[in-house]
Figure 1 (tube, one colour):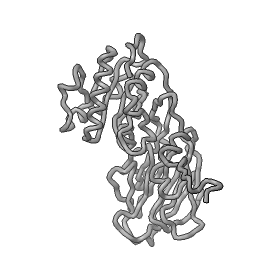
Figure 2 (cartoon, one colour):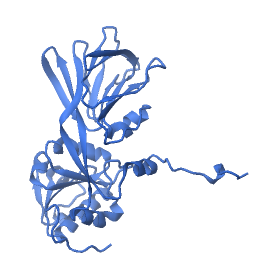
Figure 3 (cartoon, rainbow, N blue to C red):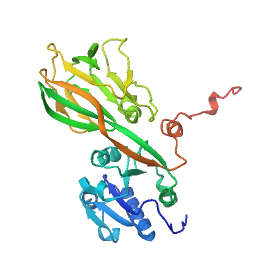
Figure 4 (cartoon, rainbow, N blue to C red):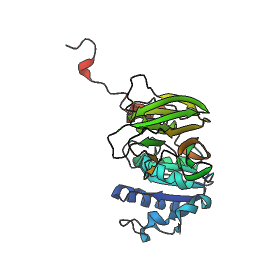
Length: 311
């Protein structure tokens, strides 16, 4: 579709980043740069993206290359090309800035990257004209503490997962929330998920779908050794502590948003709470959460063979 020149764009300095070295991703990056140039906008491309083997820097046109860690401070808007994993990766470096982020979906589901590549020009045109939904997503912070010292910390947009690594033995740990003892669990681990992450790994573990506007954290036991151990939803401001019991027989591991896992030892504790930073997402005006659930989770599947009256 042909779009007109935007006279007063809502954003003038556009950042572009992508992760997977796929032809479809590269093509979308070229299209974004071409579109922004045609609109007279300044374009920054992060150096990590520019180093993708299949990408030609010359084909990007008149862009400024910049380190990913400072991209958010240089731009008015950052466009992330890829799937939800690419947005999770981007959140690690962009959440410390107030810059809004929008995603072009080149992945499988796309709960976070919701610009349709086939409507790229029109939807970008609308967003740059100021027609968008603003959405703030909170993140989780994890700390591994030993005594009074924090020996490891990380952040997650989706989830923080305690798991047993490569072992087939269950973990034995105590769960405390806001200083109150909750349970002693024997399970393969525990998923602490934000509403954003409730449609990811936590959903596979049997957790509830939590609307992204809720200020809540979902705790999902992984294969608990009791039928009464169920997912619970707590306040987003809760402080969640996990301590490994002395009877534990395997090495517990912790991962934030699927990044490389780190060990959690018996003399340490895992503390999870809300991160001070938030990720600001933009969505096209026609995007809504329940429509995404219907299409991406196949809620609307219907077969004529189940219709009333058919024999």
